[in-house]
Image (cartoon, rainbow, N blue to C red):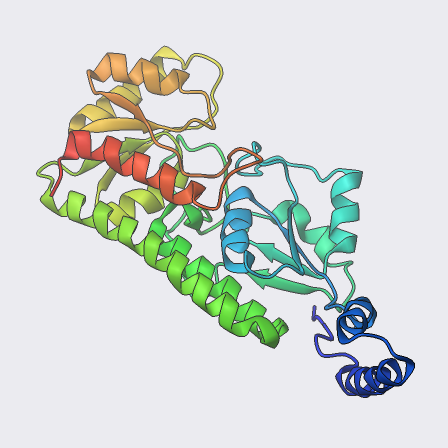
Length: 324
């Protein structure tokens, strides 16, 4: 796929037209103010750059990078409350969004496998930006209780502030190549935003370094990157979104596995049912907390949404692992 965006179209002809028109206005008695007002509507406007993002966190990152560019329109493909699109099927409206986009930005690492057949049919003029470029992914969870299979790597890179910062840099770097006139704005916005994300990563790391017990049980492997940023040890990863009660044998196996590793707590996610996590918390006596990996969010999320939610995660973890 490629993208051609004529950001400087008609500059020479527009300049000649501007000088010629000013001469005509001066000869016909028009005031300079009136001339400027008329000409402002005649000069060609910068064409709109339509960007379509696959997931809610990618949508947040892209909006932060492009916020100062009025001609850039950023849309989200799947509904913001969907979370990780394990079983998502594109709707006819989604297909129309794909066809209308100039640029499509994805998380990568197989998280958008549901889009493969549609991306293969897109115009060669559409640019596809993969945010995972240059990021070393964690291996896919080997815990046999984790239900969803993403392949060899864990694709939920957005849940770690350090990886999220690299995603932001990747978005900005690609947009600089596509739209050189906005290079300075994209670069400065990305640097400022990434700096805030990396400050959260440093806070997590300092907390983990100071903790005597670094063990944690995760409901879903999306939280693995957050745990990695904090230097925590993952004792187990549970199956997610289990709306039925586990069998007695399964519950006993999980309970033994957790108790043998002596973790500090169990962390669930707001995107999934925490029924199994609650049961295991009762069986093991471990505290249960809810951490948000930011796979989903409100449709009207402010630009600072990621930092606010991740800071809340830090506050909660520091209550148990301690502040540095």
